[in-house]
Every structure is written in structure tokens, then in C-alpha cells.
Image (cartoon, rainbow, N blue to C red; front, side, top):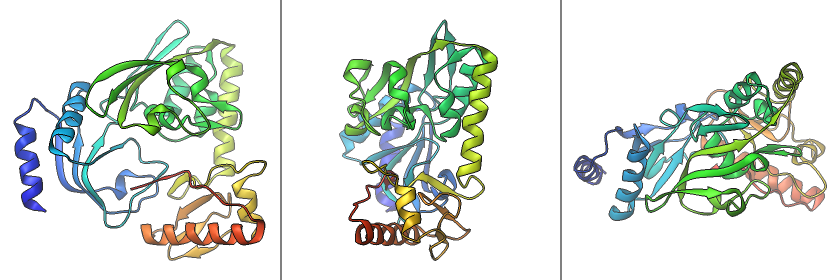
Length: 303
């Protein structure tokens, strides 16, 4: 819709926004699954002020918007995304350490944050070495690994709400739960967070960090594009176990395949489409429901 996007560009250029704007930007290369269409308008803000301007503009112009970090836990439909996609990874990737506190931007790499903390002799984020994504995405979905969750370490979150207002949200108001939070339930962007970590022996921390990173490489298909875990953990069981018991490892639709290494990861064998992936997800849900009576719940976002 050239007229619509031209109008958007005109109105945005009349604001103080100074970041990058791209029309019909393909999103597949910006996601870990490597599928999907284009963003009608992709904005890469240069500052946090740019973020606030974008959200305020989108509200005033009634433009739907979404936030893109490193593109994990995400499936973009083949038709692409109407409206505005805001890419935050590069503008919010700062990491600093103040005693036992780690202050990082929402676009900071989660594994890089784990390594930086470990190098400072701070323990608690070793599990993040095995989780791709950004801190903002991790806080939004309360990312974790088994008993470890990022929400346990959050002191406060720096958040720009859907109206473009910036505020600090203390831990008690974050609403952390299994793979969810206040920030997942409401429009807005996590622009940063302050985390509290414990002192630890650097060698022991480094060993745990290596163990988590190694476990991911051994047990997850890191050599092929995927969106990460496809389904949430059902009560008292594991999605991967159920899918494997259903005989679905290596089941394939088009170039989308249930990983032979971990059944709760679906990989792109080279030319998968979002339609392939979603048909595979539907099929796995149906078979697991028929065989075990368990309704699997999707973990990824669908755009």
C-alpha cells in the first residue's frame, strides 16, 4: 500500500524521530527460523527517545505495531506483517555492572549478558548461555531453563508503555509467572532491566556457563534454523517426550521438520515456508492430543 506507507513516512519525518525506516523489509533474515514475509514498515530507532516517538506516533495514527529483538520464539506468516515493526536489538544492547547489579538494555544478547556477568564473578545467569534472544524478550516471557528464570533476578524493569510513556516497574509489579509477565500481557517495550546477582567463584561460574552452553549444543538443533521450543511444558510431562513417543521425530512437511535431536524443536531444512511450519505444528498438536489426550500450548509468537 504505497499511499499508506508514503503517508506514514511523511508524518514520521515531521516528528523528531531520527532512526532508520524501511518499507517492505523482508523479515525472514531477521528471525532465527528464517521464514515469513516482509514488514510493511520496519523502524530501527537510534535512541530510547525514538522508541517513545514511534509508539506515540503509532497510537495517534492507529498503526498496529510489533517489537522485534533477535527474532527467536517467533514465526512470521508468509504474507508478512501489516503496520509497523520496531527492531530494538542494536539500539538497546548496552551492559554495565554496578557491584552485584547488572544493568542492561532490552536489546542486549541474553547469552552475552551471561558471559559478561560470569566474567565479573557474578552468579545466577549461567542458564542464559543456553537461551538465544535478547534481555527484553527474556524479561517479557520470563525466560528460563528448568528451575531457573530471569524473573528471579529482576530488581526493576525500564519500560516504555504502549502510549510512549517511560517508567520503572519494580519487581513486585512485574507479574512474573511461567513464561509470562505484565510485559507480555500489555503493549509496550522493555528497554532495559536491573538485575541482582550473587557473588561467586569465577572458575565455578565459568564451568556452569560452559555446561549450559554445551547442553544446548548437544541437545538442541543449533546447526539449523529454528524458533526455539515450539510448545510449553505440559503439567507433569515434557512436550518433547510426548512428540517423540508419538513417533513424530523427523516428521516433515515441506522443508519444516521435527528435529531428530529434540522433538520440541522444529527446524527449517532450507526452504521451509511459514505455512509448512504451521501445518507441522497443527499436525503434531493433533497427533499428541489423539494419542495422549494432552493439549499442547504453543510457546512461540505468531505474526
